[in-house]
Amino acid sequence: MARQFDPFREVDRWFGDMRTPASTAMPMDLYREGDAFVAKVDLPGVDPKSIDVDVDERTLTIRAERPAVQKQEQQKWLVRERPAGTFARQLTLGYGVALDKIEAAYADGVLTLQIPVAEEAKPRKISVSHADSSKVVSPAESKVIEGSTEE
Image (cartoon, rainbow, N blue to C red; front, side, top):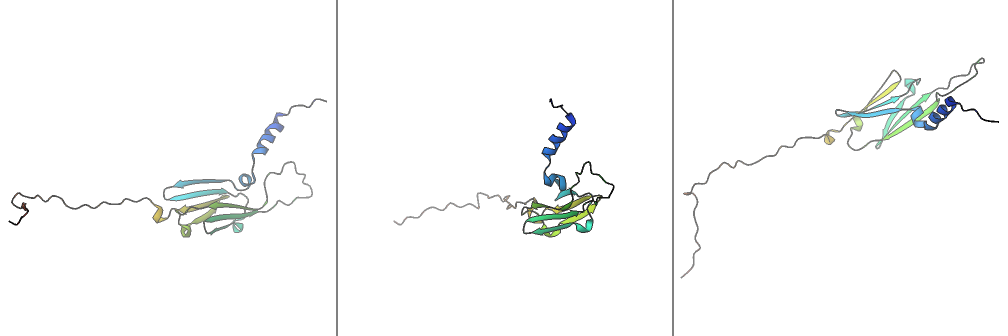
């Protein structure tokens, strides 16, 4: 028996192969804006009280929990793509950030982290000092010292 080609099933299979657990559970944008790095992590359906952000050494860890939807008696699942459970994501931070000044805010399903650049890592201008070399030496001031020889 010949198998019929279903383009929708093939497209679904292609997209299904591209998903990774980190990208489906906690997709993130990370960019630099002025003197801070900004991370925006999508956490829709997450209770803000379940979000935990901590820094240990140079590793920033984000944890959040999305509860599973309780199945009702009349429900018959057709598609279930929204992951549930506890999720975590880690970022390794460099030495040029101010770990003690990181700020986090959660609004509209998005966790925003502001990670400021440390003062010692910011570029700065170094002034060059120089001596005043405008002194002119006149011929009267310069003396020629002749070597003396004993006779």
